[in-house]
Image (cartoon, rainbow, N blue to C red; front, side, top):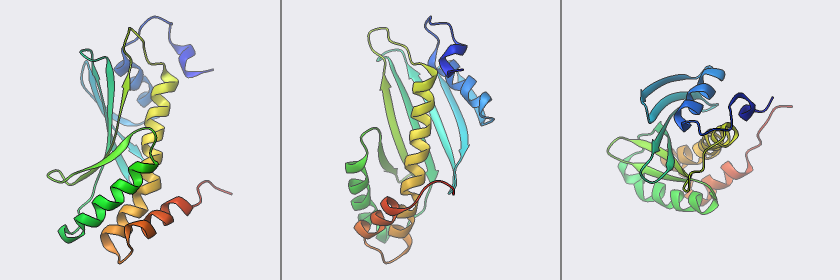
Length: 166
């Protein structure tokens, strides 16, 4: 059964859909308010903190997926260079560094203007894409921050990495 078959085709609040997905996936979550939910999703490299918030004002479902990182300050120029390379490859979403919070952030906004509504498959894909992007580029962030690898070389490791299981 498709995820959307659980829902009547009337407009469903997107955060209600996220909550149902989190329950179905056994993710730890906290419904912060009517329009916001935070959850923890386990990846191969890290546990990622994901927050989704609905803005009725601009009809956008915003998602941020974060993980802690404390690179040495002298590596920040290399981290910023790597961020530019990575964001050139990201068609949906982008990475940014929140220095004050010491968080690497992947963020995306799903615009649902004109009375559109998000289906569960869209939201599931949004969350999965965020985790997969963080998983894919995590080694490059680590290599850039903690080794002598230049950002382009570190990025090649992330691109060449094999995924899946035999």
